Structures are given as C-alpha cells and as structure tokens.
Image (cartoon, rainbow, N blue to C red; front, side):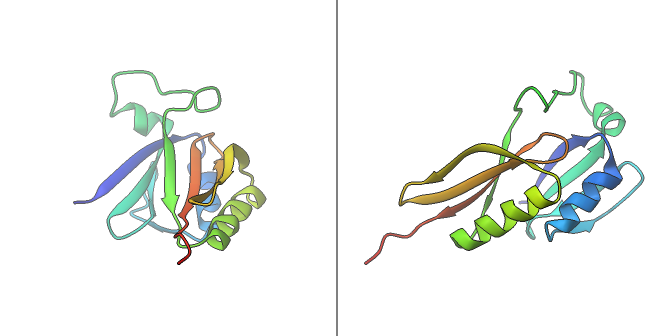
Length: 128
C-alpha cells in the first residue's frame, strides 16, 4: 500500500525549489502539482491551491494560523534530524513545535514555506 499526502501550496515553483534544497527528489510534475518522494511507499503531493480546491468541498485550511496535520519524517540518527531541519531553516522554513530530547527520541520541527508543520524524528535505542 502507498500513501499520498496532498498539501496545498501558494507558489508551486517556490515549494519545489524548497523541497529540492532539502535533498528530496520530485516526480510527476505538472503545471499544478508535483510529488515529493519520501520513500518508495510515500509521496507528498504539492498542489496549487486551485488544484487542491478542486478535490475538496470545504475551505482550504490556513496553515499560517492553524495546524491541519503534523508530518513526521523518521530519521536514523539525531545527526540526520539536525541536518534536515537545518537545511529547511536555511531554505526559508521557520522553526515549529518543541525540540524533544528525552532519551527515547530526538525530534525537531519546522514550518515549510506554506506553513505546513513538519517534524524530523529519531527514536533512540536504549544502550545495552
């Protein structure tokens, strides 16, 4: 089974550049959408707001003032968490959420250029 998460974006070219700067590959690009490849089984579809609106009957949530979801990316180690979040911040993202470092997990978050909340998470294996 595959998972396709769909997100509305205000400026598709800007969003494609942002996710490319984070090291993600894009697939299936069209004038109104592009797919960010997370893994073989998971993609995040970036849709222009008009394209996104064509699939829904409710209003598009304002991700600048409300959180509709938290997208969490599982990383292998804390260094990967820091690398991804630092790249995101350098590419124009803003910090989001609360940094967690409690011995069981290491987690940091950012809001992408459209305000969508992303977290990078590493589950820490106990020593021994």
